[in-house]
Image 1 (spheres, helix red, strand yellow):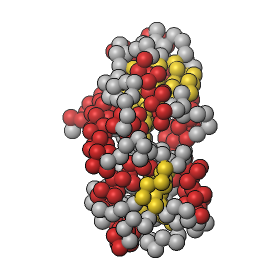
Image 2 (image 1 turned 60 degrees about the vertical axis):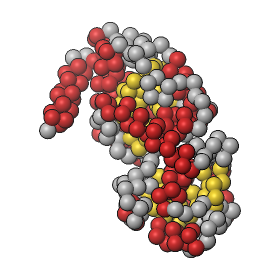
Image 3 (image 1 turned 45 degrees about the vertical axis):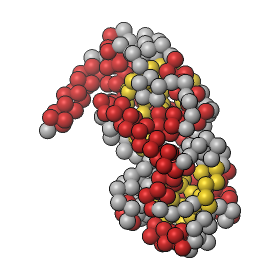
Length: 326
């Protein structure tokens, strides 16, 4: 009840600020706000950023300009944000890769948690365990049984060492006790053709590159990696539903700024971001772009979740003996 009351009061506060002219009337922002996107233009993350920015700049009364910083498996963008002035004029779309996966695999040029201050929770990216139809398994129990009977036979593709595709597959191996041979690629564009052709047997994939091939039968859906079924695939059960209790693994994204933003600009950014992510048109557009659980984590819990994931994936990486050269 107390949490609900805090959310209601927070929403009322945001509404009052926006109703009275928003940030512009208070002097912040008085120039464009920069959004750092750690991927090249044209991809899924760029699409999410543009959907959010279109609404956000109306509320802020200033343009949101994009600064693309691809590379380093998203760490280049995170480093740029950590070094940016803490004045409220830099927003960054950060993912689990930057604050939980890569910092456990190699040295990064920023503190993965304390270098940032949360502005808003975007949502999660559902992922799916998929197989070439020649693999004699139609669900998770059958896959586990086949893998145990044929140790070392199955190859599992990923979008690279330390990617969500790779680490979720490794976590699946740890939870089930099976053996899968990791085959890293540079991305889904590269591994999907080999998965269809049978050069590799399995992959943990985001939905969009796999969906067309699921519909034609060239790939088979084994299970969704998150606790909830994907809205785009309501008939595909989760891995947890199929006997791996509590399995709920998916990358998530949020908007952050460099640590140290003064309270007033930070409060205004958070209010505008909250209103953006509660806007029905924005929610519909983001869902159509593959994002789920939009705005589901309160801003005051984001840092806690980042820290928890950093520890959790460090444990997974150590148990699986993953190195950057794996």
